[in-house]
Structures are given as structure tokens and as C-alpha cells.
Length: 499
Image (cartoon, rainbow, N blue to C red; front, side, top):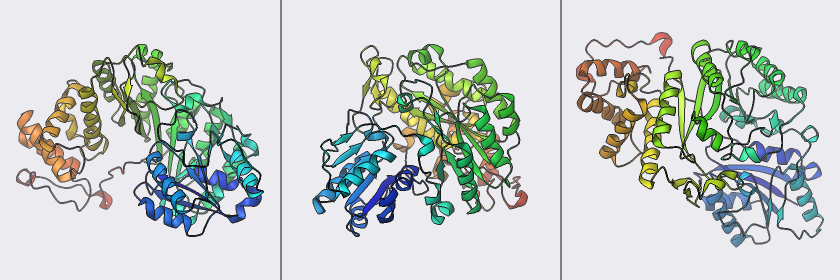
């Protein structure tokens, strides 16, 4: 019996740890199983062709919020062409009901951690043992009994993709918007075994490690051992962790300070700094600790910091969101990702629907359309706000000059007006070239904000010309007579933004 494990990643540079866990735990069925990964940018019928060319008996598909619409189409094509092929779906998007994308054409759906359930189902199919239930409920495995997947990252994966790894599963918190709030309590893998696998990956040349643990710094002893693993290596690597913002004891701080520039990325889910809103969605906030730790990371480490804020939380106004953004920018110059609230199946955020008039789209990614505090137009404006913020502030291309938009005033209020103006000029948030975006920023600062032209030009030249070999933009050339490019070591030291 032939089995293919597949998914559609959101980018080519991503890889699927879930498929490799399934593969690692297929026991005697592994010999006739292979992994084929695609991205959402690939043509669906071409994907179907590549999946069916070897005439598989079973195709298992990893299903996520970013690919579920494509998976629906793929399943439809596969069943039209090869109706006898058994299609099994798994992954976060099918773990909880209701299913808001019709996946009825699939033969089976496995909910939850599927390593054991998928093997059992495939074995029964192989043995012609009938299975009555189409939806197979969660079967929580003992992590220390699972076969680890890391040897099944290929040399091509190691060379060209981020490698996803984990040391635990689950989350102790109950934030109502997050699927992790539905998890079992935090469970850990055997750390020595995991570190042994990481060493094997390192010996094969792996240098990009993205930890998918929701609470990397929850267990201090474990976190210290993982950090030590990297600190003992030559500092030519990238390690990404999602961390709890209020839990940085001295032992963790001391180790983080030792990482060289660009080697460590910490993702910190702030979401809101409004205690009333946070309490409303069962999110724990220790504001003093959070602020203290952000300042520490900003001022005493070389780590790349990524903070998250959410627009549309129940009860939160734009004024409150604006105060959150102003506060974070005052604490750190790091990347601040602005997201729009999504209503994920299985989460308890729906308990606010009536009280706060929460209205969501039923089309992935299920984002909020309006509520009692924010109109549909407000949400649309904030989506554009988030996009322009990403292109200017987060991209690093205008690291210092973008701050001229607000100077010492409110970041939110001033950037809000900038975003409105840019959209009035472009009527779009996409396909805006760096040249065009820079020119718009220059015009806005000099003509709308009426900042002295040479001051703006000097700042933008320093920002945009950090990359050696980049041509001076035409709108800055008249003001570049005294500009001398700093080409230290042949480059700018400009950070490549990680994803």
C-alpha cells in the first residue's frame, strides 16, 4: 500500500514538522510512504498531478487556516480523478468544529495530535478493516514514546528552509482567541533525546531553527539547556523562540545577553496592554514585568524582538489600541506585528459575540468584520494601517525616517493619518515598490508634515543607502550632494527581517 503525506505551506521556505512526525511513527508502513510538500502558490491541478503520478492508496493532507481553501479544491480534484484513493485530513484547521470550509469529500478527518491515530487508521485500511467513523477524535500521545521526526528533514530542507522543532506541546494559559488555550497541559519531550537530534541536524549543516513551543521560557531549566546548546556553537545560526513576556529570570537574561547580533529572535505575544480588555479575554498580564523585560531586551541584548498586537479584541476601542501601540514604541524599536482578530473554531472568543456585537467572516482567515466599538470601515482602515506599518516600520527600510511621521507626538494618531494619505495616493496596499513607497514617504514628510526637505532627505539617505550598491532614488538625488555612503565591511549591517 502506497501512502503520500502532503501539505501546502504558506511559503516555499517553510517546512512541515507535522508530516515528518506522521512519517516517523508509521512503523512498518513507512517503507511505502513518502512526503511531498507544496506551497499555496503552486497550481492545484499540478499538485494533484504530482500526487497521483505514483498511484497512491492513501493521501494524508495537513490542513491549516492558510491552506484550507486550497485543500478543499485539491480534495475535489483528487476525488474526481482517483475516487478510490483514500483522502485523510488532519491539522489545526480540522481539529475543532464547526468546519467553515466544506471538506465533505475527504474520506477521514483526524482531530488533534495525529501520529498514533494516523498510523492506526492506515493500518486498518491496509488490512481492509472497516472504519465506521469519518471523524476520528483526539488521541493524545505520550510524547516520550513518539519517534522524533528530525532525521527526515532532507539535505535540501536544511539548505533552503526553516526547520521547525519543539521541546514541548501545550500551553498553560487560556487566552480566548488562541487555539493553544484548548491544548492539554504542557507536556515535554525527553530533552536529552531532542538535543541529540538537534546535534545531528547541526552536524548536517542546519543553521535555521524555529521552535514552535508556545511557552519556550516556561520551564527555566529546559530553556537554559536549549540556549546553552546554541551558545556552544559558532554564532552563524538563527534560532526563533516564542516566549512569555513576563517570565525572564536572571539565568535566562544572562544567557540571552550572550547571543550575537541577529542570532536570536524572540516572538512575544502582547496582544493588548489594556488590563480590562486582557481580563475580558482571560489573558494574564503582569504589566510591570512585561515592560521591564521589553526594556531589558531592547537595551541589553542583541536579540531581534517581535511583538504582537491585535486589533478588534472584544471591548477594545481604537483609542485603546492606539495607546498600546504608543506604549510599545516608547519601550522598544523592535518589530511590532499588528494583527486582526480571528475567530478560530474551538476557541471561547465566541462568548463575546452578543455582548460586543462581534461579526466575523466565515471565509478563512475568519477575521473580524465589525463590532460595537469598531465599524466595518474602521476595520478596513486598520487592515491598511497594519499593512503600511509592515512596509515602513517593520521592514527596516525606513528605520529612522519613518519616526519623523510622529516625532514626539502619538505614534498611532500620526501613522493613522499617514496610512490614510498613502491609500488615497495608491488605492492599494499591495504591489507598491520600495521606490514608490519611499517617494510617498518623502512627499508626505516634506509637503504634508512640512518638515525641512534636507532633514528628511538626509534621514532617508541614511536609511535607504545602508545596502551597498543600492542606487540613490531619483527623488533624493537633488539633496544627496554631501551624502557619503557607509560601506563598512562591504555591507550596511542592515538586518534581514526574519519570518
